[in-house]
Length: 295
Image (cartoon, rainbow, N blue to C red; front, side):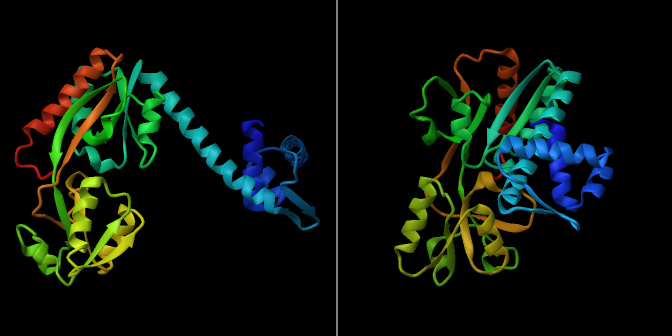
């Protein structure tokens, strides 16, 4: 399967017209038709049905084109990244994290780092579920994690960044938003969003609150769904401070509890690059100096 065949197939699936698809791809209709036939022969099933009115996707073809479109976008991004890298950089440091806001000072660290190592590219990678697995496969150079997650990982160095507390997230108009600190009693009679892949420390707090029998709860699939529910007025939630994007959309109020999160970066033990050491030092310095910054 060639990239041209992929493009022809995706375009024909969009237009369902051989003539129009060929025009949009700047080839003749016989060329496009022939390449589609070659592709169907290769995959072993018909992608399109033909008629006098044009083309239609078969059920298998619809599924195939859906996956093909994703593959083509991934390939396009890979080529663009390669072009960027070859034009300006001679090395790269990839950083895996579950969400962008997990490393709030990452953009500033990248800016400061570029002043010392302009030939090394910092590449953020957002992997909500498979970050540790990718890191262990050496697909990334650095991994943002909670310290408790790193205890059984061999061959790594753990770099402590900051301690993160637990916060209550509520609408800014919520009466709770006026408080400086939230206690368990403040939540009596309220609905608490729970679940969504919460780390153990947060789950412990959630279970303790629900166990009081004075707080309703609602299961939520993930953090984004939870925030959508909070915005819709369906309840409030507890979350680690490192998930705060500081956009001002919600009120984040410290919750009174002992539980907290030790946030770290992991590197591979055999990665001794000076550029990596410098980047880590910059990032750790930014967090160390952020004395009054809520985390």
